[in-house]
Amino acid sequence: MMKFSHWLQALEAFWLGEPQVCPVCQQRSRVEGLPGCESCVAGIPLGWHAIADTPYPCFCLSPYSGRMKELIADIKYHGAVETAFFCGALLGIAAKQAPALVGTKALIPLPLHPERESARGFNQSRLLADGIHEWWRPAVWDVMVRLKKTESQSELSLRQRRSNVRGAFALRQGNVVRGRRIVLIDDILTTGATFAEAAGVIAAHGGYPQGLFLASGRVHR
Ligand SMILES: [Zn+2]
Image (cartoon, rainbow, N blue to C red; front, side, top):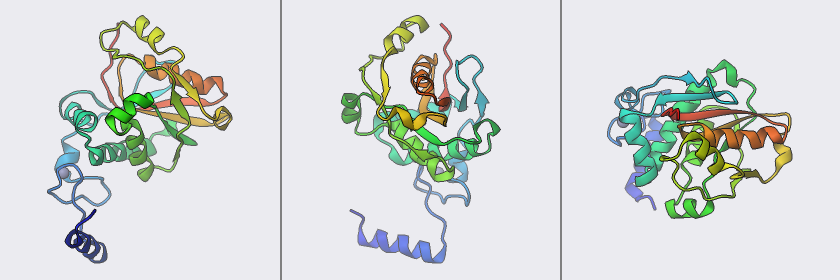
């Protein structure tokens, strides 16, 4: 519940058009047209790039290193929900300008297994998708489900990862993706095995999948 004084401040800021507070540091003011303050935005190593060797087109905003690594840990392990929206917003701003993503119909966040989601309290990919949606037009569709609870994949080879995620995803309403350009959303791309599996499900239902990731920690094994 918001304190009355905070609520009054927010209302005042709205009427006076005062800049809002940065959601990441919660200290400095947001820059107009950006989701955070100058310093928090500048702190992220932005480097929009396409990933070449995935079976479907795939784009990342930043390398998985430095400040980006810290932000993702804040989101996943410390529940920094506002930071997830902020990162999603940056992704949305970049995606909006990417020619390859023109014509995207919907964003589908990669789901967590229900047990993992209830333990964490949220799905970070869904939060990212909400942030993206605020700055870029496509709707967010919660139509993908995770059937298999896969264990941590970090110690597995690419071949093991592929078999680990085989059959892990399904669509609740398969017909909605038919003939449509769909962008799958997730936080980190490593080997791409999880993305390939989820994208394959979209393609099997007649959709055209692409991927959009906050960070790429590309691992070739
Ligand atoms: Zn800030």
